[in-house]
Image 1 (cartoon, rainbow, N blue to C red):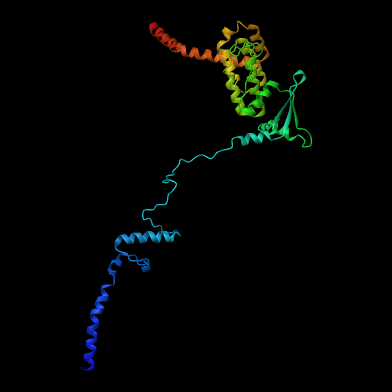
Image 2 (image 1 turned 180 degrees about the vertical axis):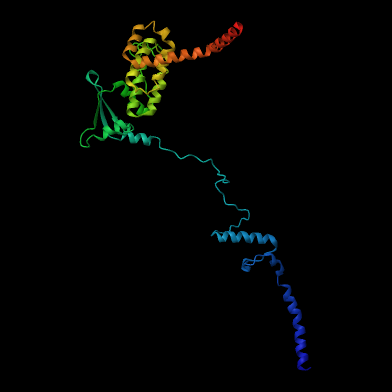
Length: 316
């Protein structure tokens, strides 16, 4: 056998072995659906399903994340998160603000004058809510006891103010010998709330003004009590006040013809002493009378003109 025959025999014997090794090679046609940048080191993949998984892998790694072994994993968001327990609101130390009040310096307040002069005390932080009082406190010396004087203020009214600052409400006890359900014949209950109202206006505490105004409307008074109340309001409020003045004027404009008989002297004295009250009541009386006449008007001018034309035609 020559050299060419020996070479042909060797190639023939190696062919089956090569074919056998070819059977062990995996089919690479399934990778045609994979992305071009697929890393073959990730393992064997098959079909379009693997292509979707690899897209997810690229998105996760591109964002700096880590691949999770769970295929259906979805990170919870604020809208789809389902906590196992209902969220609980953070506990707020409700006493902290009030504690700040109690730890502030004490201020002495000398209210009223003469026999009614009274020294009250309060925590400074509560007083600073009022611009009027805050200015007075700022003038106090740091080296001396803090003290402010309010000789023109009523003790009971200022006490109601302090009670409101601590509790956001105030109480007004009936006068001695008077039951809470009795009518306020003297007008003292109305006066107490009116004093609180005017004090709140001076101190710049709107919430206290609203509260005092609400309490005024809860008092059952008498004509004599209403006169005393009207006198105080018209002498202690500004001319442009409508919250208290207007209801008072309207009350007397609609009821003075009946109520004045029992307190005629007091009513006359009020009208003479407080001209603004007299004017407001009279203006409302005339306004109400004008409205009634307009409602009852049957166009007299139109009827007169028609009759004139008829008489003229009849005379022709």
